[in-house]
Image (cartoon, rainbow, N blue to C red):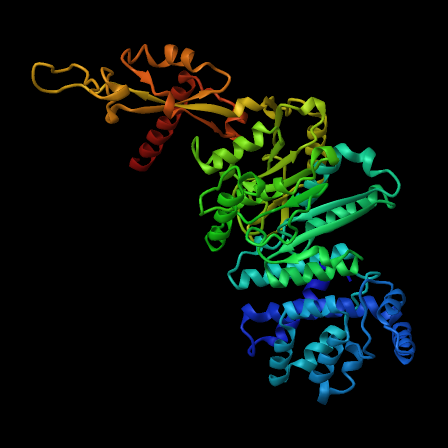
Length: 585
């Protein structure tokens, strides 16, 4: 059964729930039952061997767990003789038997169903007389990995979550990222390490602080397996949404990953991997979501720990916490002297330029660029994500830049590279094709300036300081308006200001001077010819950073010649007059 057919089949369970459940509650039933059936099918081939092993070891007072894990061939097991098919043989006791079956799983699986609050939903289904038909429906489908691959299963979960989020008016995009975007990000963080990753037995760690259902972790694992079947990728993650966390944990269990590495909770206020560092990281934090709920904890860490904590460089405005995840990832980078780290994060346009010099956002950009961490930013097409049509950008950061990249930043404009989807999914109407992913990856790997076939720039290389500026305060003298001193500057009378012209707040202005230019030269050229009495207050000068991405790819198109415009207007006027004459005839 292919993935769309499977999703449609599972979705048909909603027909059973209609009337007894609100649409917004369908996911609370369908998602855990899908996970249960997947686990049921995965364990089926070794079920009898596990039961026999459990009985034999329990009979001689040995702890059966380590023995049955070997028999199961997975990092989890179920020691109850029931399965979904056998549950149907006793309709009168299906609720009790289903609970007994779930309790027969190993501890990590039981935790998954606790996150789903599965027991309470089973009781509600039983009272409504729906538990048997729902169980029967799921018992009919074969979700063994031989029939439905891990990648297909991940897509099934993502499609179901998206559908449930849409009918619940929730934000589907907070839970997962389009797979082609993940493939691009994985390409970009691994591209320069192919030689290392192809070594036999290589072990690397990957972390996602906003793991969702585990899509990024899964795609990265698949990439590494394709390139080096002998390589091992240990994945780590954290997720706030209980249902997404449960699905991610189930997926990691089936793939043999250590599910203790998947933490539950809010990454910003309760770091589930404190003091750990990683080789690679990926993240798609929520766009434009405020962090007021965790503000107290974040500010405490910022103020008390400074640069020893995660948020030393600065704090963004409370209305958008995406840059906090950027700082969190930077704090998680494996130190350069221990091998270093590269990571990719998806952000909207706001982190590129929001906030003037001295603001939290600007200070974060300053920290990133002055520490030479930013390798590249890739501008993606609009309408790429399920919950928003806005422009998005992939930032690639590394503390082990190759020599050619040191002190430089690459900007890649891929906003025009997309193909239309056959069917829109929420706000997602466009997708990256394989050719687009390869082209972007090649541009990044080549690290050169480039243009498209029409001569429009698509890749540009800049020195780090190109994004910095001095924000200077230009003062003009306050002048007397009445009396004998009319028009004369007002001079200070005390302290350091004694005898000096006093500034007029109404005439005060600020200007940004590129870091590559002398402030004195700028003032001489741009300010004094227009205001000879102006001066700069050096105490108010601040250093700021912004990345005006779109400006660097803007191509001026001169207007058409005036003669051509006149000719077109005359032709239009003549057509209108001809039409009027025809009506008058």
